[in-house]
Image (cartoon, rainbow, N blue to C red; front, side):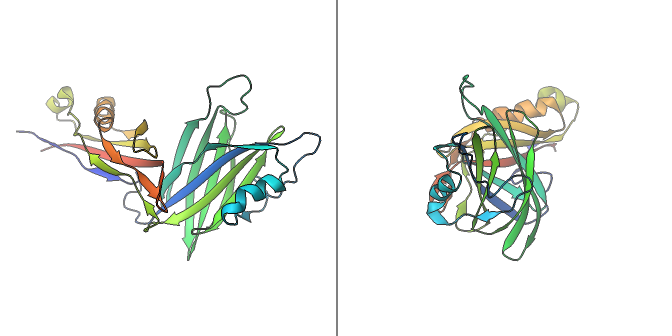
Length: 256
């Protein structure tokens, strides 16, 4: 009798054998300033220098430095990325009303290397489908780095903290896993394959998005997504606080 064998890896494919992984914690803000009194830009994408965020007062420091009259949080994803590796997070931030400057963003994180207690990353951000703005950063583990990019009358601000695997970061853990059903037509044809899914889990442990990253067959993709939708999760935490995470789940469909 043929049976379905699956393996699920909470790692970034196709770099599952790479070993080291980093978790990158982001806070993404949009700030508005008076056009008659433009902000003093001390950090700019893509050619400016970096400034290290200083503790809990960093938001106030940024708001003061850039002379911002308001700030709002667009998102706070925690992204897992392998060494070497790359991943992306796409998120909508509003209903797209006529007064909204930003309706969605895409965040791209690529690891360039690790040297001692620091990591070198390439961070790219695109807004509303526009061309990406990117910058290399060299960040000490556990220390925030602030980056900013001027828009028309607004400022886009990224606070980035890079963590190594350890007690400060606890990934979401599956409480219930549902095995996918092997598509009958593929089983009959003895077709095996692998599906890699990008799964977003919010701070309550709810799966909010599932996107295929790689698949050997469309029917396997549908089966994998249908199964993972039924999983339940214990939320992940950063320094004891629940956080949303984006994980990669690899499911192998094998006949034996």
